[in-house]
Length: 316
Image (cartoon, rainbow, N blue to C red; front, side, top):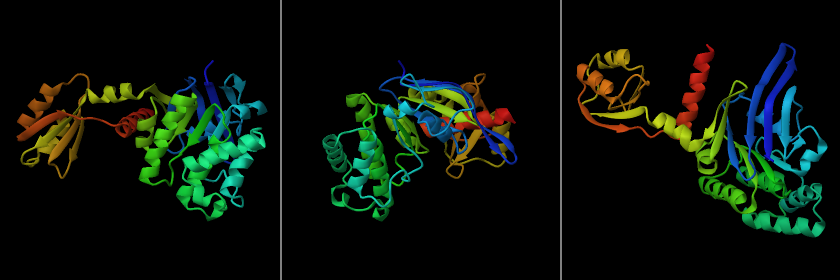
């Protein structure tokens, strides 16, 4: 049984100006023990999908299941815990320990087990000195740590994490990445992670699902997506920069051309019908002195932007 099944899921909001389609027939699955990134620009439908999966919203149509349980049923709470919208899902007037014990109790943990989980997470997130401090007095980074700990203390097999590193410093963010990977490796947890920090996604997720305008536009392993763009992109180092008129001449021959570093370098993405010889011929004819040519190595952010921009251009 898959941990998450989303099949032809649609969500429509009613507004005074008429219906707004947040999700339009999206489908994807997440296997047990898998860490999957859910990516998209603001308004793409990521948070809506996550809220449906944890039972906070009802879909308009389609199917959303967590370990075989429809997300609309109350018992879905036994299987899923969520970190949503930053650190707002904690109680400001409760201390760190009180928040953790409260959320463990909601999941049905006996008092002794709730104390054990609380102590472990307080130590894990470096909150020992703040364990009796009320949440409203914590720094933003500490609030974010507490919110994540409150999701983990429930002990559910599925974690839905929306921007889990928001407000964390670089060191803590890297520690959290390792912790998420360890949850899947040693405890068999399933994680669906949504973030605008592509470094976090690339470092933790084996696979990503990309949403654009409420639709799934990509669903593949991260290495496959990187390889798809790596084979067509080149970086050209220029000895003397671009001569007068060379840029316009190159743009007429090479559709995806981007000057870099005050026109001391170029990045070119070649379409399937062109190859590196086409690139070199165009540079020679434009009178450009080339110092070197290398394959451009895209990261996940590059891939995400190219996919989403291509989708948006196709919609026009």
